[in-house]
Image (spheres, rainbow, N blue to C red):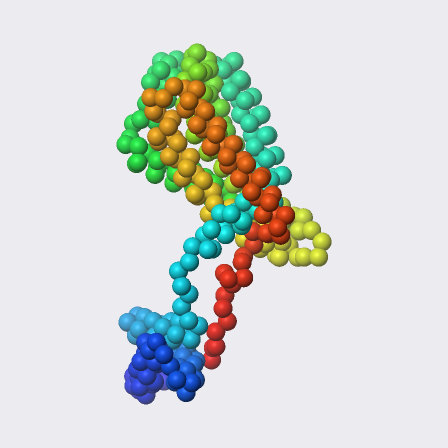
Length: 331
């Protein structure tokens, strides 16, 4: 095929489509012409893409097809309603629907974490395999507390936010395989258990809990939610339930998991602010822990209270109709 001749022959149609796509108002005949030209341009794009390596031509024709599609379907006005619906219905409904999974993960993890702290504090020789006595003493007396004030607050908040969001995302994304979720969760519990064991053994338990609890209550809960929902996704292909295939069950659970991932990103942002501004602040320990406890209780009330109300209204947390793909004419 002579590509240059092909492009030259259809250049007039493309120019006409560009003119019509830019007009705010079209007559009925012009609207019909726009649809026809859009269909033809979509076909032309497919032909050119299969015969031409020219990125400029492909980009230009792609933009023209997109403009034609937008002119046909009409642009959507910017609205905060989907965002409001997400935080008042979709996200809390998913938290409520998955509560048995992440609450179980939370209870088991907290018990395991307590056992690890007790074991390491009662067996300092085990910790000695990783660090000598001087290193443990420096960690307990200086390094642990200095960690929270080493960087500027805004930078530290961004750093812990992205780090924790990545952990939660890894739990959700690897949930289909199940074992990686258990590995990620176990790795974090082991690190925290060892840190707590060192602090307790060196008689700095008050410092440890005074610095961990203000942000850790919410932060760890978000990780437990990510792990629980990830395991629920993985369980979908093991036990899909009646009247649906494994693929259907997995797709439905994965869509819910993506909603949870978005919501956890925002929630972990709050935890990051607590860790950067409240944890290292000069406020009394009781007040700092109290702030963290109030925020954690608010999240639990949101997940179980607001989520339960949304669930009873029939909210499933699945894709809303307005988020579905709008069919458009194609060639």
